Amino acid sequence: MPGIELITGTLALTGIAFVSAMLLTVSRNRWQDQTNLLVDQVNKLLPQTQCAQCGFPGCKPYASAIISGESINKCPPGGDAAIVALANLLGREVEMLDESCGIQKPAAVAKVREDECIGCTLCIRACPVDAIVGTQQMMHTVLTGICTGCELCLPPCPVDCIDLVFDLPAEADVASPASTEQPCIHCGLCTDACPRDLAPQQLLLFRDSLVVAGSLGLSDCIECRLCDRVCPSELPLTVTFHEMKAEIAQQSLAAKNAAAAGSRFYRHEQRLSASGHSVRERPTAADKANLLLNLKK
Amino acid sequence: MTEAFLILLGTIFVNNFVMVQFLGLCPFMGASQQFDSAVGMAAATTFVLTLSSAISYLVEHYVLVPFDLQYLRIISFIVIIASLVQFAEIIIRATQPILHQILGIFIPLITTNCAVLGVALLNVRQSLNFFEATLYGFGAALGFSLLLIMFAAIREKQAQQNIPVAFRGAAINMITAGLLSLAFMGFTGMD
Image (cartoon, rainbow over all chains, first blue to last red; front, side):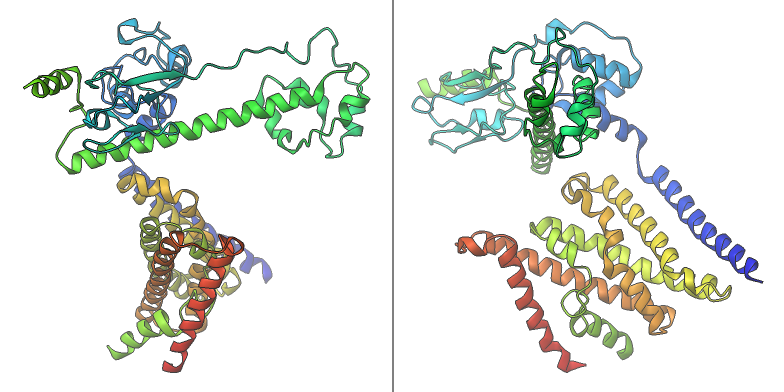
């Protein structure tokens, strides 16, 4: 009877899958610390500047502290957005930013005025993400791609030769492209015109929710402007799509940079702990004063 | 004992899975940019390969054969391999977070490493006993690790060389892999 074979086959396979699933669940509970997972999630929401303005040596330490009860409003670089995201994740009240930690500033990178640098290496030791290169008696410089703008290198510098260069966003000179004065009438002409079989009117509809637009194939748009040409309302479709794509690219770049800064901080921490130091032992203004005193002698 | 030694020697050099049987080429090319991550990948694959050849032997002889279910061999082996890979990933994530970050997508991709399934299926075809099957898996894994680490070391050296523009990237890697394969052909005489 062929039925029997089918049943034993199904049972055997289900059995194998069941046993493996059991083992996996057990080992996951055994190996994977749930609080660690939560710390990782919280850490992802923090901006990864490692600026220590919260009073902890970096973002990861602050994330662990949040899990064990620290308040969520101590991150000036993250600002209100980070507080709201953390409150949502942890189910806590949204609070105002704790101004005693600092205020939110635009993104910046540090820059060494190189002819003034005396090569004291204090800033190198202060940098939480190893973004400053140089050595004793040699000029130091900041790797701008890696610098998170945490300002930790500013106080120890004995000759105050480090500046913060703010990366101000360019003034938005064009008005919002698709204005509501000329609404989309959902005629579908653009859908017929699109050579990539996209639905431009749908993409336009979801211009504020980039994730949805992305799943509708925004990245497949080749910006050929055929939809612009057929649109009876003369909506600037292609321009809108171009800006949406640019925004997505910017977001993913920011996420990538944050992850890189996080792992650089982790390595920094590992290296220090291997050599018996702690991340908390950063040079401060006191070290600067000491150095200057020694120089005078 | 000599038997065991011969199996190990045979799988590592003579029938090396990567260079002679051309299995498991994707992690060989994909996870060999950095020496450190190649070592991690080799360790993870060794773990998965050895265990999966042992467990798939048990499943074959105590589940599939008694119930006459050999036609389910591939799918049940894949289930076993996939769960072992998950297991390895859990361990790596718990013990080596940085390695986990570096390897990233390549850990789940061990599932689709054809060498892993290949070894499990070849074990069945060669009708080895349990000990031999496990050893065969372990030897195959050692051979894979040897090649992966060797290739990563070569690639790290290569990255510092002044390679003609036309050969940079995948091209020179393919050529290097081809030369390595030729070198491994030299072991066939030992069989």
